[in-house]
Image (cartoon, rainbow, N blue to C red; front, side):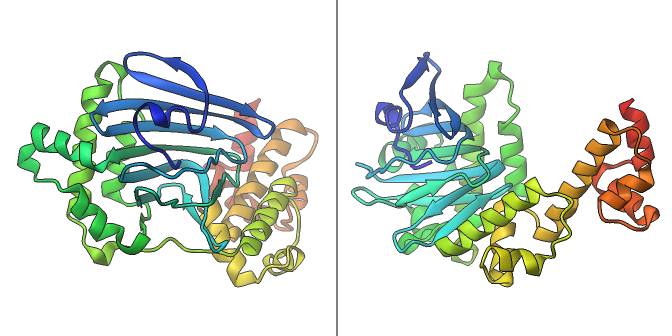
Length: 321
């Protein structure tokens, strides 16, 4: 999601697909999947992009020619950033990051999409031009982009905010805005977002958690193993040993990638697989499905199933018939 505004942005990641007087749609198909960015020029120096990526990576080296403030919100999936020393950080579901892209400097040396799924929004501001727009279009707000950048992104740091009410409120409405009022509504939401950020001080600055490349890759292997083997009886400790990662490191990294603890994620995938069995194998009793899922006690299985799926196994099966 390393971008620069105007036409130069539209040529970095994807070749043109379509352009109208409102937006630019950029698309690319690769061996690892496909991705689409829908970019809206909200006002001079201000752009909003909807990211819908289903691929391993869309990284392109970028050294910006102006100073930018980049704000990213993740709705679904996960985005991995690689820094110069080989450490990686993650933007997960509900997270907001604020980064400074400085003229002539490369912020990231690589990026990946670990789950091959990322949906989110990027608000990109070319600081000099966007400031002129704010000064003429919203003088009463007294918003200073350089002050926001210097407060939240000093010394190359990034602000990372985990999902919270103020952020969720701002972005949830952006994901479902009626297209008939989209552009003027974008302007209102950008102002709301910048006003919120202008209230934050240095105490809010939190450097995203960093993980070594080995920890990141090993944790992603563990993630894939759970997906492919939802009924596995392997413990978390055994899983960490299998992927050659310290258990504590794997747990922290897994939460950053998946948005849930590894234990919760294993339970969810086990119940989802059990739900598929209830429908696809009607000859199996609920007790047999419970045993397949690793539960000797049917009542405990039913309680776990309901906590994930919202209904009992029996109700789920009846509803699906």
